[in-house]
Length: 154
Image (cartoon, rainbow, N blue to C red; front, side, top):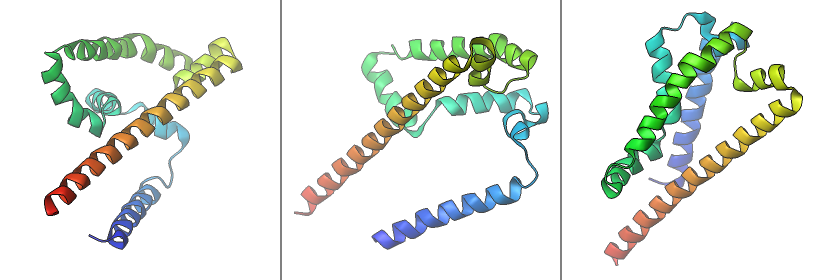
């Protein structure tokens, strides 16, 4: 596969995503995006919560980590479980009661603008660092594979 094929594939992927978003989001508002008209079934919200906490790195690295750590990763699983219950029984009722869509809006209403900004910046920095790590990990794996292939061919 050549570089132009890869770029064409990536461009096509983004074009399809933009097309889908254009046709499915014509009459939607910000309220519809975040709350879905309060008509989402519980299992769909549950899958969304779990899906938001997982990534491709999770599927690749966790099985090896579980083996190497002799199931100490189970503590993380229990932590997620506790976190989901806290979200479901503490945070979501507060969100519905105050009619807010995010923790940042709650921080702004409850503690003021500075708390809102600190929370938003902290989240942004953590997401950028996480994305950078995942990119680094992907590049590292691809580089290692390429080096092995080159070693075998010579």
